[in-house]
Length: 228
Image 1 (cartoon, rainbow, N blue to C red):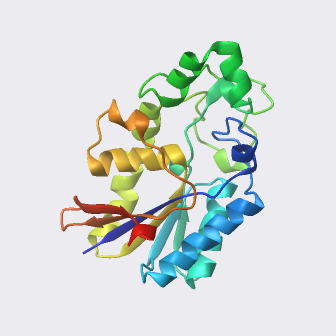
Image 2: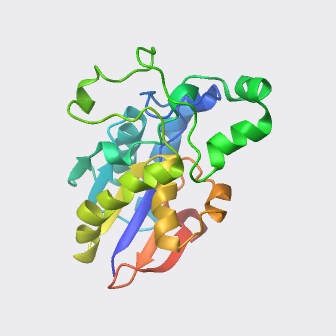
């Protein structure tokens, strides 16, 4: 039976600084690197070794994947990078300190921006220091100015169906190293979580989540690998 392994990138520099990150490219901290290696060591110890991997085009996810695969002894497996696995775009909140933003706009408004299903943050202004139009990795892509979780799901799930599901259907073990919200999109789909309940789901950094799937790619079981 196919297995799908989901790993959120290790702690990033802006995770540490409590800043909204979204599509901005931020690297891992030393702790984040350690989390990524620990994830790979766990995969090896539990004999949950991937045959193929997918990740976003953001450095923190790519480096998490590479460090985990090195620790697992699987650096040689095929990997695919795609922007559709990117983190949710936080729009005009990008780069802002979360505590300062809550003090300015109120805890309830920030909670809505962060956790509501279909309410995006304010749009990123053209010409902002966090504008990615000149970034070559997004050439030819209509870069969003902001995204809700619903918007994120609208790009993640078609990619899952087109690129990842066929690999799973062949019986392979797939590792997806991505981000809190792109992984929440997959968990919502695979576990049938409601729009309301998904707001309370937190994906921890560097902790492999395993889906055991049946022949129709329905979830037979979901668990944290560290608990097995």
